[in-house]
Image (tube, rainbow, N blue to C red; front, side, top):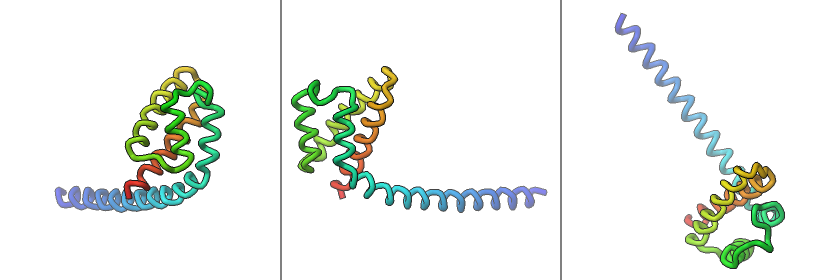
Length: 123
């Protein structure tokens, strides 16, 4: 009886392990196919954020304007990526509180772009 339980548990464990490996490889493949798509639409994501974000272009602080310009030109450093990401996280919370879905989508798109560009620049 005990041997049957151990065999059943072993089969379940190996089955779950195989499923987990398959799912992680599919997610990695999806991640690798989304990265070029997001980088390709960098200008559109920035433009959409500037139009729909919580703080549109005229209300932006000089530091944030500098970071956005550096992001557009591709001259932003890793520390500046983190600084801009922190600013966007606070804006994301503001957009959630205000139920502003356009701003939330714009902010999340820009956060994804920053995360991808930062990870690519680390490599």
